[in-house]
Amino acid sequence: MTRPPLSIEFLKRINIGRRYWEAKIANIPNDASHKQDLEHYCVHIAAQRNQGNGLYLWGDNGRGKTYAACALLKHAVRCGYTGYCIVADSLRAAYIEKEMFDADQTIAQRVSTV
Image (tube, rainbow, N blue to C red; front, top):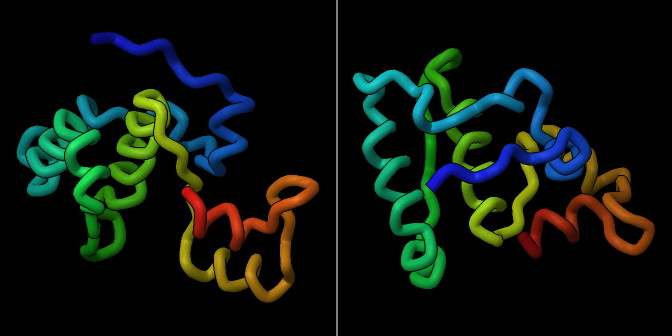
């Protein structure tokens, strides 16, 4: 099923960087070692989430981890889930500075609830 694109405002709200606005799992090369796992997770996202399963992406710089994570996040929000894209260093700074997400919620609080 083809889903409509997310609005730029929504992509900004979930903190996906501009360079990942067009991220799609379909665009990941077929020979990428993580593509099959991402596709499986997306097809079974409801069951995966109900079981408390997530994905852990790791590897050297430039391997496509952030692209894959953004593509997965976009898929998840289209399926009705919530999420927020943030790297560990930025999360630490947001926690220390109590940086706000909304008027009544810090970024650290938002990340802990999505």
